[in-house]
Length: 511
Image (tube, rainbow, N blue to C red; front, side):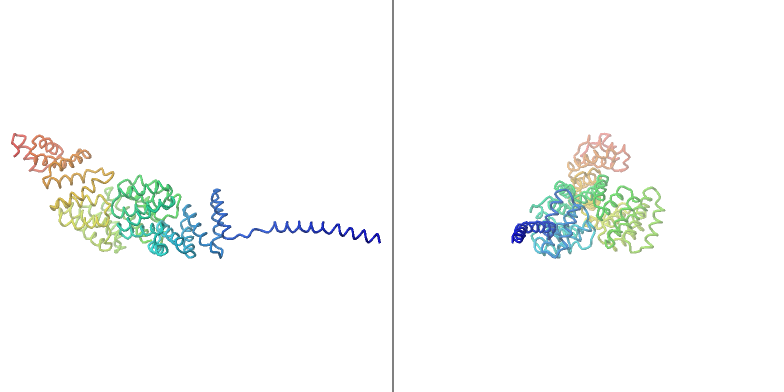
């Protein structure tokens, strides 16, 4: 009896202890079970990693979240696109934005599509306009759709509409990235309108908002090239290419900058890279041929005109429908001072590419400078300026021809746009402006413009001659003798001016 009582007592003591041990084992097993990784958990995890500087880890977490069958997957894709874009991984960012747009709706879908359009633009894609339109369809009032549509409208040549859209986006506020993108869109719109000074200011504002903005940097580099400051543009583009090796637009602009700097052989590498990366980008493919033409024209500028003509003729014969080859051959023939042959090629160039501003300009130049046909040159210069309103050289010649054809007021209007452009430091437009005022007998205005020309180019005999005529118009004998005399010293050969100078020096009174 005592034995069973003892055994029973042991069992009663052991049972709670055993239960307690089993409870501890269960807790240990539960502790070993992993937390269920929902999309929301992974997004929070990505935010923490990004805040800690672990961008790779953040991207990996977002990729996992985006792959889940969860309502938060679209948000994860959008976040992933933003992260990849900030790292200039443009192809992966484009894929992420596409995935986000398929899963999202409303404002979030609009942002994904708007960002997609801008990334495609930088990457050199052909679907930019379609993505922008889809973004606006998803969220008509959203900042990113508005920015994307502004860029699309600018690229379609609708400058005023693009400016209004970009200004709307810029005034809407948002984060630094949106602010920079809105200013870059405004810069592109103003560039399309031909106001390079305002465009430059907008691009700089974009960089002030986000110093890493590739769109603002590319735009600023383009404006610098167009305003004769290609050397300043080169390091900006090198920086973009280093940080964003997938930015096709950077390679294209880098090639153009190197051409402007007289380094066409260096430009070939950038052009070829752009063409290889964007096989469906017609502009990138054509740029390779443009560099080939520029290389041949480099020979002409070095005095080897015949060799340049030979190379360009061969290129034309191989590609008879290539506008760049026709244009290049026309330019070489202009250098050779063969205007009739040049005009044949240039007319074919504009038939093949009616929006080719350079071809229209060269047609005008061949007629005006080589054939002395101002009236015949006028339509070509007008079309050159219409195709590229920001080109100060084209507008300068348009102003000159307007003055020569008796359209003084239009000439003054065009030439004032040139002389008032920031950084303009050439004597040409000032001389033509002075000539236009002189023809209209606005002698004081002529003298003001011509003095600025002489300050830039003291050896410009034509400017001194026009100054002489202006002072003659004011019946200022001292001023006339001073400037007409300088023109004579500089080699001016106009018999009428020199005869009048001789008579005034002999004591003839100006009446």
